[in-house]
Length: 152
Image (cartoon, rainbow, N blue to C red):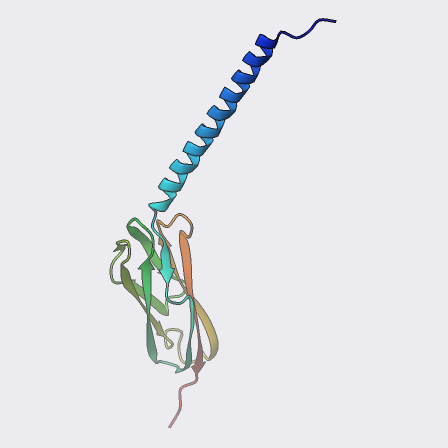
């Protein structure tokens, strides 16, 4: 039986240590790069995502303001603000919000849009589409209890 060459064994162990160290440092570098890149992104944050207008007489228009904040490190760009029904309108005071900044989203609900027959609880939504990579679409939802018109 032949003995393994001690120089060959030492050389193999040196190569193995070299490749292990190389893989470790490449992995470490990738983690650092990805962490640095991920930190410079916008983050959308809303004061509330749900609210209740309570009782609203048919024909009455009610409004609510919701603060939209950018808690990220890059400009938050809002691409669109839409609603699920024509009885609801929503406007954002500015579509680009800098890091640490905020903009006011105004939501108006016109309970008379569907005519005097509408009554009871309704639920509507406002959808915000932005460049936030983690939450590209956020929704604000509200309910209202539409009361019939009072006749004299």
